[in-house]
Length: 584
Image: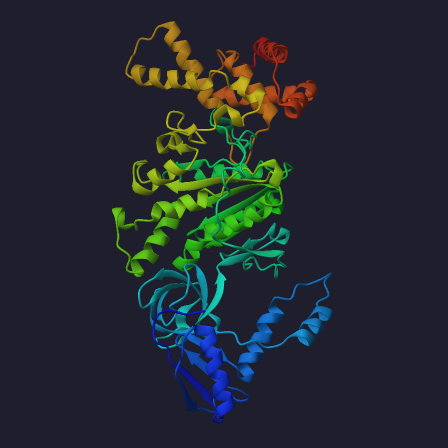
């Protein structure tokens, strides 16, 4: 195979001069390999005992003892474990192994700093390929230029200096995957950081992969219940959907994602939480929260903390997605949270500027849209003939002063299938989760709801929209007619109903019963501050005295007219009893 159109030269390093027959064999090898006559120069050297080293352009053939030993080592690394016993396989591999004339491309570091290395001599390196630097430092090709290559480093760059060698591996960046990662905290390269020992991987998957094709997908029509009242009733999320969680700092974005993960307990859904640019203490707190609520055993945390170099923050969401794809390809459902993609874009911007790429809007590079689109497009629900697994993505984006028109928010809004907008004013008013009903949307909608939830939710969004509009017009009015006052009290009751304690996801029967009762105006006359206590008492009564109704809703997901009317009647009687007993 011809390497390129340049005139190549070959240099042979050995301690003994080759004879005429050996020179003839070298000449034939070079002619067959590169498709042209290559002049050969012999250089005496004692650095390669037991063999020689042949350099042809950027290719290196190391036929010394050390070079052949490296070949054997690389072969043994690939030996699989069978039933926990690797010894017979090692013996078989060693007995059948023969060294090959394999070309290594070795380059030289021109400059290094801030986690970026510029190298030359790797003319055939490919984008995303892993390079090996001095002392085992790993890097990834990120920028290909005419005479040099830009590379991001995944390890400490102290041992990488100007003039040090760098080798191609021929491998793309990837992470180990497998069932054993469940319940663990790992970094962007799949290395455990929770102090619980090594993880035996079941395989190795590339961090960059093509998204499933249209043919391989099926419609999003199966609910992924978050347990959050305001989301499941008005902005439902389906398996395979991408729903953006967006809002200012400290408005409860992560809390919604964690509630959704906790709600997957016992629902055969794997959860992956990717922490990008967060404090290590925050990640530990999240881990402890998941353990406390029994969700860690079906979850994986991938972390690239704020103290980690930008390359690790850049690769973290792709590593998490690769782990999710392992389970999806096995027919399982996965919920993955990217917290957050704002910091991910900032890390990519830092890398791009260090690689001398041209800055665009807000100093981000021109391909920042592709950065996130190729990640989120990998979320899908596969067709049944290839397993029917799914990846549901909850990307999180932080806004500044509620500005959803900024560059990164608008990019990701256009990629996802809807957004849950959390408003600071609602949060500080005590409305938590602080979901803005007007700006939030799910583009899958009722297709991702059970029939019971869809029927129970009814006119909830319209009623809330009318209340918010009326609230604005009447906030300065001192004299209100009875009808307007009743409508305001009804809307206030609905808003208070949507308040929910953190880490307390609600089951389907709780949400359906509450919605049917509330939209039937059963709470009329109850003071706003007592609404949640009334609802808790009502649900407790249903679970104690009418468990058949609760189990029927949970098991069938159907709410017929008779059952709906029965719920209304029972709720009305409960309301009358409270009034009769003077509790109201």
